[in-house]
Picture 1: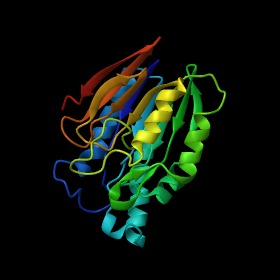
Picture 2 (picture 1 turned 45 degrees about the vertical axis):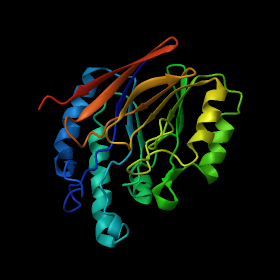
Picture 3 (picture 1 turned 90 degrees about the vertical axis):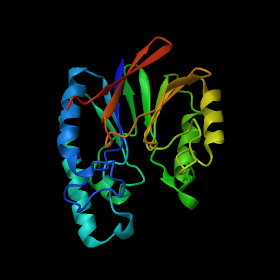
Length: 245
């Protein structure tokens, strides 16, 4: 099985301006995402994962009528680009996306679906106090239930934020309750792979007690990378590709 992974577009097209971080090429994202989709299709993956921060929605006026309309148009633009993927696509929102608008545009996304004998599970968490991401409430209850049921299929977990490693030095990228989440994952015995974005430098694929973790680098920043994972027996390998532009 092959999985393509791309994350953190921080796109602005209908929304005015660009990201507050100059290295994030928000206004070039429509053309670059289209190229990336073409290159991903050439690898013929079984699944494409897009792990959040699709849009760079302005925090200072998240719910103004103008920004809501333009933010929805930008999400619709991304949806159109991702419809060109030849494989099923799992899409998450991140802390720079507007959750309500995301659900309006991506209203039929499956959060639990089968793939090549595996079970793919998506978790839509959010930042809490002091910008620390947390898995709490309904998302924690669902996570707890899914790691306690009797379904024998190996699991692949998708989320925007990091469970491991800890990367909270300059900004809180890792869950506040990461230790608790990780303990359940390692004890479950069925979880094979966790994929996330959010931490822009990325973290290369690594394995701990049979569970693989990977953080995709931010596509919005040069060299505009995406990853391909190959799952074979008990082993998972990673290849990283950058746009030749």
